[in-house]
Structures are given as C-alpha cells and as structure tokens.
Image 1 (tube, rainbow, N blue to C red):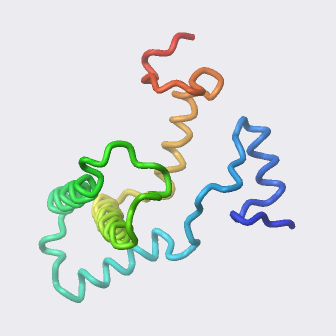
Image 2 (image 1 turned 45 degrees about the vertical axis):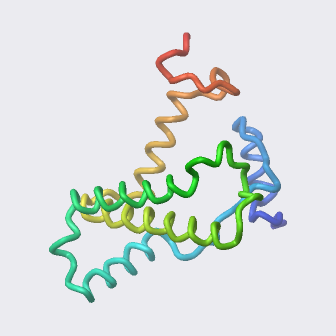
Length: 151
C-alpha cells in the first residue's frame, strides 16, 4: 500500500475523487495520538487527582470552555485576516494559540464525557447530516445557509 506524505493512500485518494472530494496533498494532518479517548482519560485522571469533579459539571465546563474560546479570540483580535499556517505569527504566538486551543479541546471532551456524548460517533452522524444539508453539487463555492438553496 503506497502511503503519501500526508498519510493518504492511493485507494483513499481514489475514493475521495469518486465521492466528489478534492485531494489536497499539502493539507495539514494531526498526529494519530493521543486519541479523543486518550484525552478524555488524561483529563479524568487530572480531575480525579485534584478532587475537582464536584466543580466539573456540565454548566461549569461549558462556561470554562467559552472563556477559553474567548482567549483564542483575543489572539486573533485586531489582526485582520490571518493566512492559513499563520506565516506572520511568532513562535511564541503560535505556542500560546496551541495552549488555548488545547484548553478548548480539553473542556469540550470533558463536557462531552459529562453529557455522555460519544464525540467520534456524534461527528460521524453530524457529518452525514451536513452532507445532506449541503450537497457539494449545489453549494460548491458558496457560503449561503442551507435554507437559502433552491431545489
């Protein structure tokens, strides 16, 4: 099986093309580990070790996550459009962004855990719904909301 530099195989690229996808050989990819379950487990251990479960209830986790999203927003505030890959950012600014995005993800995963939402499965279901709401043949290149498209 030939692997391309971004982890795609010839078969997966062929499948994407058959399904109307586009191949992006330079597209960024995440590392395979840790998984969402690994992150859930690490955060559960962290919380348990500190006896913080009494505070980490859904509403509090949601508000903490929103606060962290605000911190991500502050990093982008007043910059105008920011190019993909953040070419004009310093290493320190990139690291700060990585910290804040990590906080958002950690709170998201813990919120999903407390609400008993299996995120990977929920993502699969949601992507299927999005494909039906936004068929590529109708929406390619448009930012309209799904309610604005005519059959």
